[in-house]
Image (cartoon, rainbow, N blue to C red; front, side, top):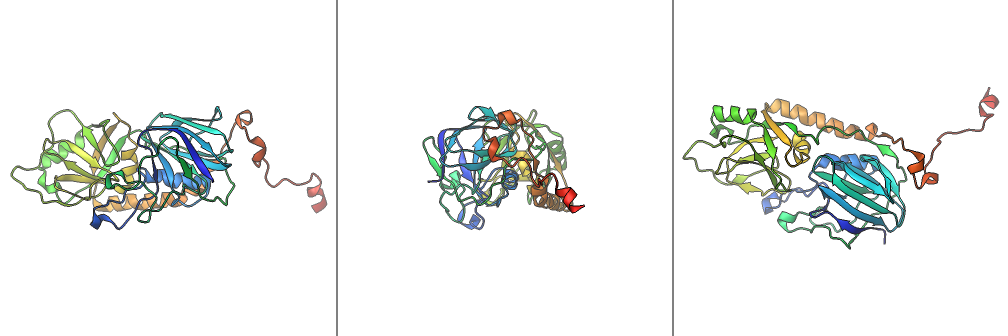
Length: 339
């Protein structure tokens, strides 16, 4: 069987793709990869569909072995990685021979790393997706000793690289107003936008607690909030005034007031902010949010064109002879014969 053997793996690692749409009415949020941009990047590096499932690694990786030769790509939060002891470049695609051991260590920045394979992980489809959705009881975490099936791969290209962006360093997240933003007075909204928050270490795929100094952020007194639909990006304020940013596996309804909603284009930066990383929020009008989303859509379409050849030290390439090192070579007298 064409598979990726798991010898060791970080707690909480799961198979993820783009998630499952259309089930919110049944209490199942979309789920899917925490950083969907990392899925797009991995697909571009392997020249395959972004619908292919990958292995999501929270904080650190593990030790893996290929049963057959396969292509791999590494994206998301950068992690230390070696293949049979030789270091590999992150945010790049590589060839992994049968029996070779891929060792992925801890993240050097960010929160979620991704291991992609040519052909994608071919785990069972459940409600139209391969993603584990632990909060909904769909799928499970990947365990040591498993052999993850890998789909057929018709392509052969490797050795592509994408420059790393800055979404792993925290920063500013843009907000649009929610239905309940008006429940917070102007002074509270201004103070919220001026506050520097740190991501609590207890974050998970459902959401993250945002810590800050000073008083909490409370809505006007005496208001009862009816439970209503919620989405990833919503920032709920709990009874003690603590903000929680809801993520991919959040519940589908909730009764806490929401001070605002992080725009989808900024969610990759939110989820990739590591524990203790700093975040700030900026309220923007709907028109600016739509423009940001269009820019993100345009960028995603351009990612395959942004991939560039990976320059590597030949002494560190174990399978050097399998790479096409020269393309378009001709016989030395070809030009003369055409003259």
